[in-house]
Length: 454
Image 1: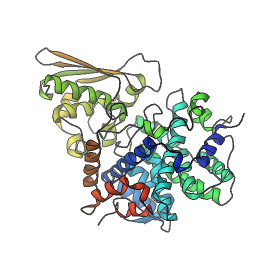
Image 2: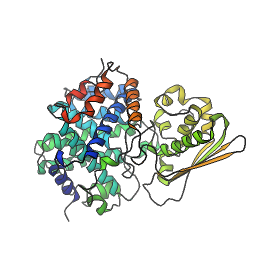
Image 3: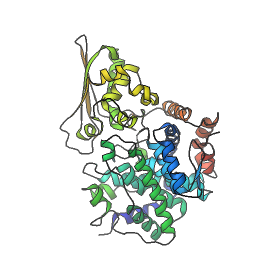
Image 4: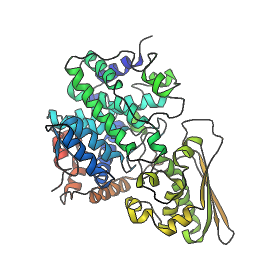
């Protein structure tokens, strides 16, 4: 049996810009802009200075600039830092069925290589993103067992290799070698998620860095594995478990996974969004206020419970809180929304949030799908004895329940304004216009010009 990695290589090499449907091109633009903004907001994340400093001292030379900052780093180091910036606030887009954030690892690697190599035009950038997302999400979508390794990093790295392969003009042998060389470096454990560590986002950076290195090694003629996905110790067997080969291969070139990607309307784990969405509806319908809530119970699939069932506690880090259903629900009920300031130090120790959060429980239901994030149901019990319930099958931000363009652009502008930078006034609007007309862009370095601090 030929390893599926060959089918993915042929898909990448055999697809031109003109083969992409208009819906896929529009989705690329949407989530490119979204990811740029999220990456800028990530400059306020924990350990950014330490992360940047470690790479400045570890690898000499320069090749690409760090978003929101401007410091030049060698491309592998720049990819690692930017990958962390995109994912550290849990605000980057997600493919729900693949349980994978497809842009963080891919875009950080792709943009540093586009800057270092130069003259990557907009159509090539669109093609690279669409194909990279296709590779990563087809892999993730085929898995039928639960997460052990951190799939946004590990499977995301295959998407990053594919995307860099497009702009680097790799031939078939080079691309296959690059996939294998990346797999030899793939890393990222769910233990970081369990412990609520900033290392979770850093694992995205590790795999972005390793995708850059893999392509450079392949260009130098170093061979990689050929049983990369389906060999006895290939990625799907060793790092995932069970998978559906039909789901892996049958829809290549038929379904463009970028069109299935969901927005993150809130800067918290996607698994929190169903509970938040249900609560927003109940607040709007019944005029609920946080002060009047006696308790909240959310019933969610086992994966969702595993991801966000953690209780509110003293001494929480922002990483822990972003993945806590009780904390995010309490902030929503008390403040009427959930945004980046809700994860700053003062918010994390707010007494009213802790009091309400300890009365919010997230419980697992009997959903048999190990990768399901929905459906979820929420019941709010009020101090006056009233009780209100809601169920959610499709969560706000999903393509079937999308953010409007107005909401998408508001999120982007807020993220740019949140950056440490500061980013020069006017750059946000210039980026919006540039991405809207991405087909006409002559050089992707012009995007990075607008992402660096004054």
